[in-house]
Image (cartoon, rainbow, N blue to C red; front, side):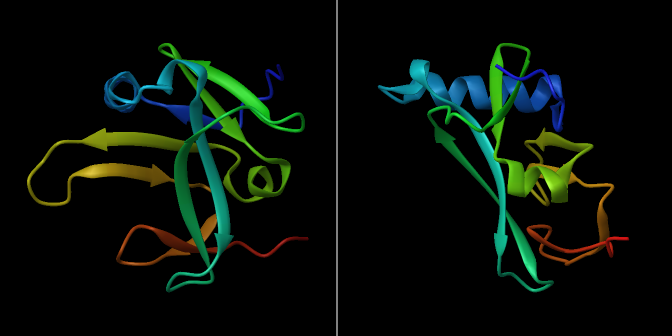
Length: 116
């Protein structure tokens, strides 16, 4: 288990994730995988899924939730914070990413800052 902190979960987000994992029959053996893939309005988009740990994953635990990030995604989301709001308008998971040069209005995609 790596203690390289890539992404931080707020307590509110961790509570919501624990509730969702508890509703999944195989949830106890899974963590929250946060990843980046090509697509979306701005070039890259975020993804979140419950998944098993893989050998090259970076992993950290917040409020009893294991957070998994692959090395490729870590380069784009290091320092990000995942929060959750149950507001009727604009609710859901929100990712605040300091490595995003610009984010799309949908909140699910971003343009990375230029490297080097």
